[in-house]
Length: 148
Image 1 (spheres, helix red, strand yellow):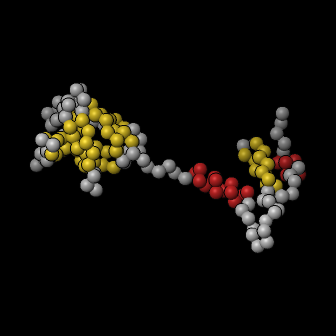
Image 2 (image 1 turned 90 degrees about the horizontal axis):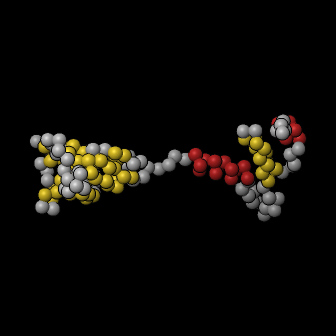
Image 3 (image 1 turned 90 degrees about the vertical axis):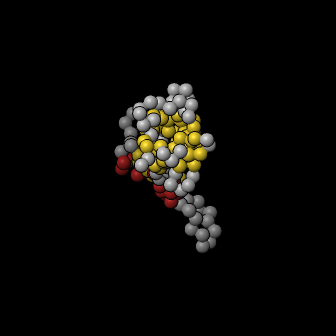
């Protein structure tokens, strides 16, 4: 069946109704209510549609996600069963531990973080690595370097 032409659609439109043509699909939306109080113009359907369309087009805000990978020492060996602390520039800290293969998985807000191994429950300042988190899951290995 052939869709009606634009002119035919406009002729068949009843007064007080809004017509939208989207990708050859006719959408007939009732107009604003005629029962508004004196002095109250009410919200029109067209205004509501614009607000909904604008809301749907807003970008999705950045959110935390999982960073996973392996941790390597300065010599290139994996570090199994080791606890690390991830520090953000704001002073926040998150701890994580590698498994027997040196793999880790940590939940972080998007940003750039410094990673230190823990020795006796305290961060070891002689070794550090960098990890970056994005608003999506990412695989990223951490290579520790000796600080000078």
